[in-house]
Length: 166
Image 1 (cartoon, helix red, strand yellow):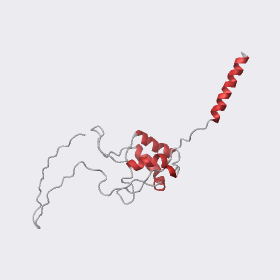
Image 2 (cartoon, rainbow, N blue to C red):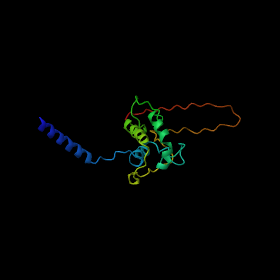
Image 3 (cartoon, rainbow, N blue to C red):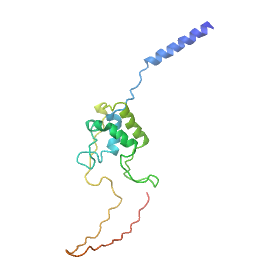
Image 4 (tube, one colour):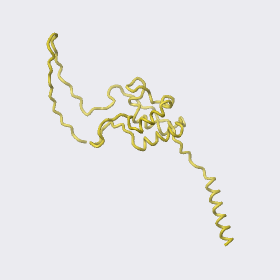
């Protein structure tokens, strides 16, 4: 009995020693490696200099002061704004974050909102001018001239257009 206890203790200690010496990979979430790709894909189309959003979210220095507010906005699904009903179907240009993307942002904020290695930062996206959301169709209406002094003349322009499901 004493022999089996000694052998078990020996193997247990060897296992603990082996486990203690095994290096554990760093799993910390950083802006450069984990958060920037999410923001670049879903947020910076509006949140870049000289665009519709009130602040830029392109660099770590721009994002860090807003980390807690970003966390709250994505958890409540206020940001990115998308008012199309998800029960209706899938839409092009949908910027909504997945549950995994939201969890990444939450974990990043909880762990101290670290910047990370600059080498991990993806290239900043190119920002187009004009439409943020590419429309399926643009319909122009005929131009009309209204004579000065006349009453408002309401014109109804009927347009029939059938959307095709994708």
